Image (cartoon, rainbow, N blue to C red):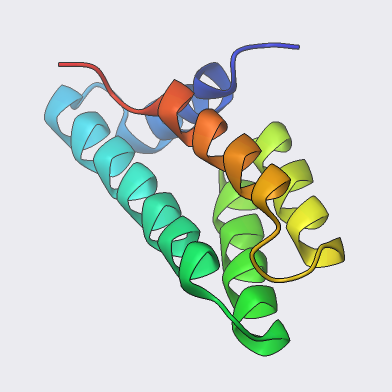
Length: 101
């Protein structure tokens, strides 16, 4: 499987063109949005909140063709709120795409 960050970076590069500052800003916004939805997943205690956060995470991932993150969001949609295995896998994936300074 290709590194997830590569797929995201390819789509961000297409959007930002030659503007490196815009690329970094868009990448940070993507990671921040994904982390926000992950945080909502972690705090969800009912089916509705869990499903909404998982669907938003899936939508964000789909925008940038982040297939692994899409699959994990789908797993979350099939799991009970707070499912620790799904949460650990999503956290690990997000850690792998976190920009390094």
